[in-house]
Image (cartoon, rainbow, N blue to C red):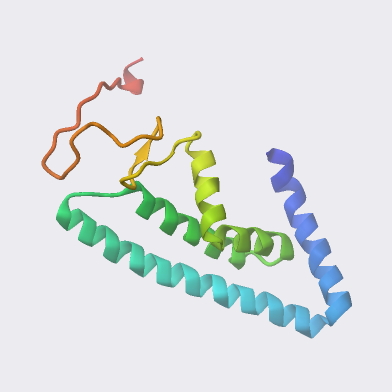
Length: 147
């Protein structure tokens, strides 16, 4: 993974140089500014929507994981569009595609997927625990700073 972050700037620079030689320097510069503007717009819109949705969900007492993962992944797409280059722009387009984005989120969640009721479960079935704003959460915890 470390190699990816070391190679990425050079790969982005190479692809931008190739793009500039194919379509012209001014067109390549316009492409960079267009994706920058598009990334800023996506982040701004998703940020405002995320805050309003979280406020309404907090008023109801429920925060749904799907809401957060979709909005955060769209914010990631906006950040990828801010980086000048074709590689991160291609990654941003892949993140913007809904079904592919959900599969990537499933993969990052460790193979868990959404159940029939839309909640996240490890065993691919609906949760048997009661769900709602006034239901207690049960579990165990261990403070890591005490060790």
